[in-house]
Amino acid sequence: MIETQGLGKIYGRGLYALRDLNLTIDKGEFVFLTGPSGAGKSTLLRLLLLQERPTEGDVIVAGRNLSRLTRNEVQAYRRTVGFVFQDFKLIATKTVFENVSFALRVLGMPVEQQRRRTYQVLKWVGLQHRLNSRPDELSGGEQQRVAIARALVNEPHLVLADEPTGNLDPDLSLEIMNLFRDINASGTTVVVATHDRELIKWVGRRVVQLEHGQLAGLPEAPR
Image (cartoon, rainbow, N blue to C red):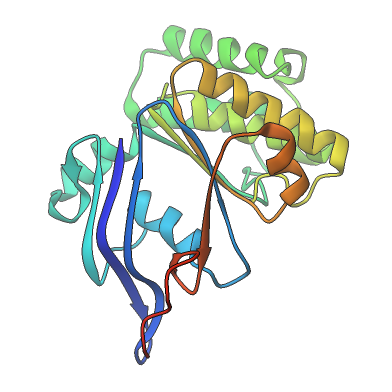
């Protein structure tokens, strides 16, 4: 599903966020990315989402080299990827329903299909009763579930999450991780970046640890 080959990302004057990263994630896997701050976790997710381009090497997802995609192909690719942020990034002036259905409106999906799909995914995350609420009327856990619903509404093949439980208490964190496990059980590939070792231990999935932009255990390349 995901393969990186000699992947590197440089910021500023020779500052490597990622260096010579070779990683494979199989279709349908649930993988945790972990490591200290500055290890390269968020950079890798941004490259997978095509928010940034690599300085060196390749990122291949579902057989497509992301560096070679045209502008139109980039937009089509992003529709196959769901992304969940730590700070939710919901639109404060829109209702729960509007936040989740926004992507479907942009795609031009018929209104009745938009309604059906949005309701379906909100029911799945347990928030069908909050359709008309605004983000500031929701708890942190509810906001994150809205963010997950928004990530899933396009039925993506890949879901990426960057510290999705960072603003939540332990009980809510477990609740959100259960949702990610359910997403993965449906066949979707899930990649979650987190510092939370207890959460990783509880969920019990494959762990990829980064240090200095490389897989942990590899000698750091000279600067």
